Length: 131
Image (cartoon, rainbow, N blue to C red; front, side, top):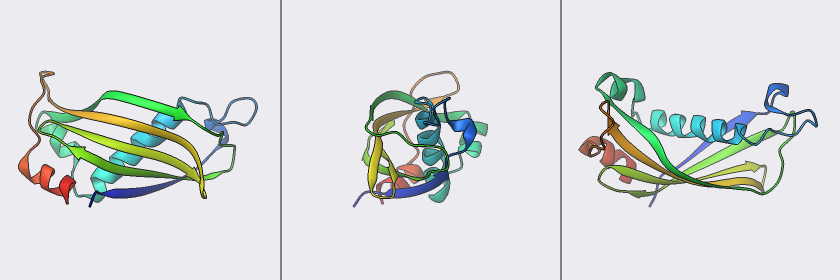
């Protein structure tokens, strides 16, 4: 069974364009927040990893915009761990307004050392992500 995490957010005026529609690049912010919350909910501290000279980076992202979101909408981002490899993760992230799918993305994350080189995920993190 894969890990699935749910993150809720409200759309504010600052998230929209002149037409009151969510600006396309903000979806990337929303799914970034959801990924951070998923790790936090798994008790994986990105701050501690960073202090240890390690961190996750997006190495590949494929996004599909299906329907617009609007000012004052309540949205849910569902993040699912699809695959855990030695030094990377593959996630599926979907943004919903109630049951309507608005946006979906496939996101690959690489795990790096502060010298920019890929490094293996620590065993404890792999175990948490594979549970």
